[in-house]
Image (cartoon, rainbow, N blue to C red; front, side):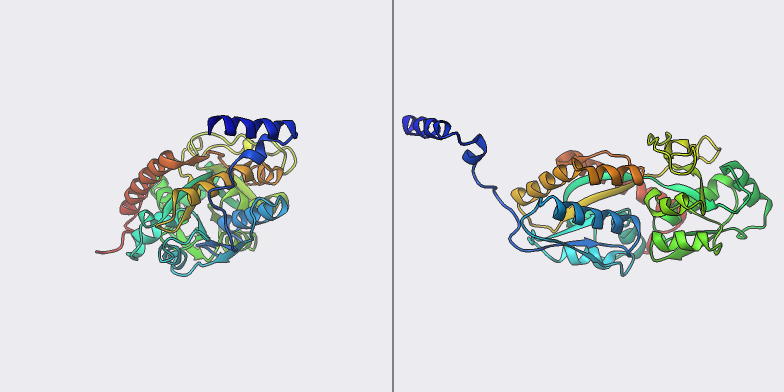
Length: 335
């Protein structure tokens, strides 16, 4: 058999066939459209990322079938997570995750935990920025904090996505850091939050960069600080001489609050290793496209990528962090 195999390779080489044709067919690939669940509303960061991924995969023919984005934002995203949890062994369904992967079950007590899903990959980590309306007089985070401190409790309105979710967790941490109460107003998605800030219906927001970049370009909103331990690295100019790297950290402005959010992919429980490997490979290909690189720039993402045990360990740690933050904020559902 060994001689026969060697002979076969020799013939292939003689015929000028590439080594690719000798590879076995992929262990698994989708045979029908793949549902891409977004456990959040339209226009927000998760939705924008999902639709960009859908466009990239279609444009570059990276998958033999279509990727279909479906928003299931009910119950703070619980509707989407339960749908994937209940689609056992269905490899034609994936979900993009944000912090509600942790916050929704902790806040609502719904029968769901990230361990009910199959981790695939971390696509990136999303930043949070403190934004104000550009017509307001606050040019720095310090000036805004001084104004909040000088006003009665609750006079300043902070807009965010959902209740007891990441935006409100950051708001509570901000209140503790400055020793003053804000009035938190929840909206359905980050897109709506940006519109409310431009309209002057709220005083500030903690939107992701991608959710407010177009309003910043239009000089309707102003970024004051980023909730990361280091400044952003993106230097492309957005407004005048300003880039994402121009924004100071909130910590340097005296606001001791840090927060990064997962943008990851999970599958239903009970899928095979080959099916997971297919999607890990797919998203590695996506990350090499110019469109993905543009999204990373536009949204000032932290481009950390993880899969396998490394990703699982990261998720375990993030769950503990969120439990601590939510306990501190008094957001845990009563048992």
